[in-house]
Image (cartoon, rainbow, N blue to C red):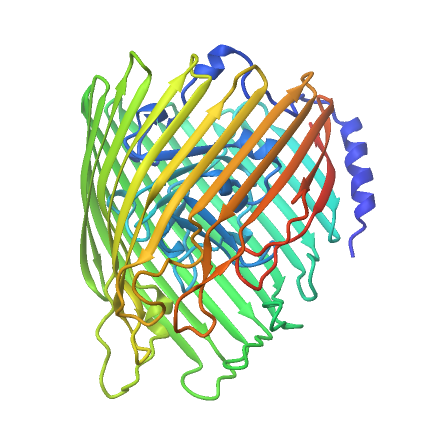
Length: 634
């Protein structure tokens, strides 16, 4: 075991020894009215910079200050405040964590890191369990079908994570914390710029035993971005990320597994080039190679025994942006993707010991954006060609109009999206008649539209927004009466998303969001649940509120709460309707105090009220937990 108390002492000594550079420990949400009026720029809605208050898509932004104030360690916990998103964690930290966007399946949401798709694994979905907030500058969440500009798995929308880009003199931040469930976490962050070279780095290590037997979780993560800018028009950079996590898998409280163990290792490297040829012509090129390895040993499923899953992907993404005039921009691009995945099952009693899948994709897209005074109109199309099921066309039309007199923005969009069959869908297909080949699986498809309004008041100290959305999902992969895996299902989701953000006085930030969701199955072709039943694990109502205040420029306190109700869970017998599960709520409290410009102490209490709840039936979340630590900068 590591000597944790010694780490606390070392951090304290380092804070006294180093005094090269002072950085603020706790920043004000708004220090003056000009900051309150500043409008951020988003990229994900159109693939190029556009003011957030003119976005033609429904967009939410979480910046690094939000993450720091709430002491959020994992991206999934940051996403809990976003309307239209439902975060479902299978028990305690480290277990499978899915995100449903507007009620659509988690594999139908594309996750990007600096423009790089990072959905991995045999299922094609992104497991948020091990994605930390290290080195994150901001997170942009774009809701609604985005396949036209981001391709497969952007059927529901995209979550794009942007890393920090180094600037200013190099500096280092270290932290150490400990708390309930024998939890310890260390972090390292550094960024800066020297001459033409810039860099940013974030790394962390988490050790916790959690609450149940065989529930320990260990996670090591690192992400770095480096760049060289020979002039103001070009930057040649590279992004590298690595994570390794080990979890004990205790299974449900009804059928515990005392020794089941799961290891996940991921890494990727992605060189990229940004080139501004002229004021009106820009190029971006990303080349990415990533790997994922999963080992489940022992695997106490009583069927296939220990398994090892492998995933490799190579991606090339080129974007060409041409500003033909002051009001017209043409964005186009080329996309290539190759995926090799498989699972090794060395102890199966029948069938092959290694099953695999190989997929290639070639795509091109074009998007036209007209910006005439306060009216923005976007229209685009995309063509994707796959080696195993042919071609897919998608389109998107979106617009926004800003009324200066009232500081109001109206926005709407109509789009199609698709999500291809995953490797898991293809290689684990059950065929009741082995002599007759099953028809090829087709992509799941969506037709979605939304319309919303955003109103800014009181010199932009208050912003409120509301959006109505509707999705028709077809070609859903499911099981028929013979348990064949086929394109059988259909579903419909619709609802309302609302957001509020207010800074009524300096140093006080209030946020709130509410989502109403009606998500139901509209086809009786597959046997998972009857027609008209609600989709499981999609609550009808979600409410989130938070308040953050900086006291005397020294002490930052933040409180957040969430309430979730009207949920259903899959029938454990597979047949028949889903069943209701309990509502839940939680309250988290965080505080950080600046001792001097080089040192601060912090602490938080999660689930302050001790709520007993499970986001997935049979997998209880943690009870009340308290953590405290120290942070130093030099």
